Image 1 (spheres, helix red, strand yellow):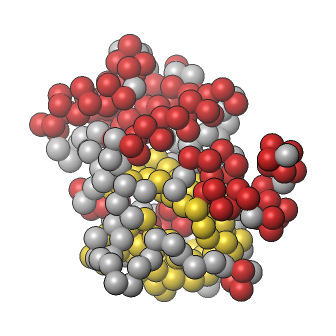
Image 2 (tube, one colour; image 1 turned 120 degrees about the horizontal axis):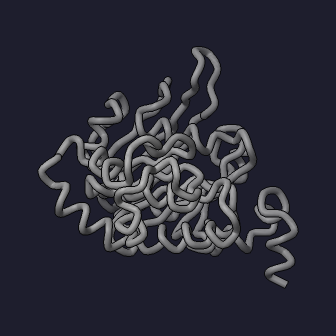
Length: 258
């Protein structure tokens, strides 16, 4: 579906390179079997970018590849112009990239406070300062500081996972399905939190199954299909695009717009 891809509005050849770039990534989990096929994404300073598409489109694979968790066979990832394609996850964290996986994103046997301490294992002396900052963003985590993470609700675990990633004061946050498995009310809370984190100065790339809600809060969106870019535009543009609605968003968006 590459013939339907629109131009990327964040790319201006006369400007400096964006904060984070995934440039024509071909990647997969098994040698010889690629999930991503020349897939690209750019993230500018201060942006919230959403990635949507059908199941199996390669959305999660894209953010995992950007975070060094999937083998990249071709293409490259750049942070502020530096090629970071072959760097391991801990090196990316030290450069200011945080990642929140969809599953297994907290240490259930540890307390909330201990989970947050794990977030600054590379800079333990910054714990007190960052604990205060993250606590201001997520007051409920401070209330639950001595509670084991495994006993938290689904929404609270998601808050803790994001809070731990924010402990290193990242400039980029990669979120893989942050609303997955949550009730509609808790999903909405997660989207509100993501928007606030973004407004606080953290640039975000968010993979989401709740496509319409994601596009409502993101500056730009990417629609992936079969591991490649299918559509790109602002969140507002994609929400109104008839082809995107028909193929990826469904009748709920049509009904909402009517």
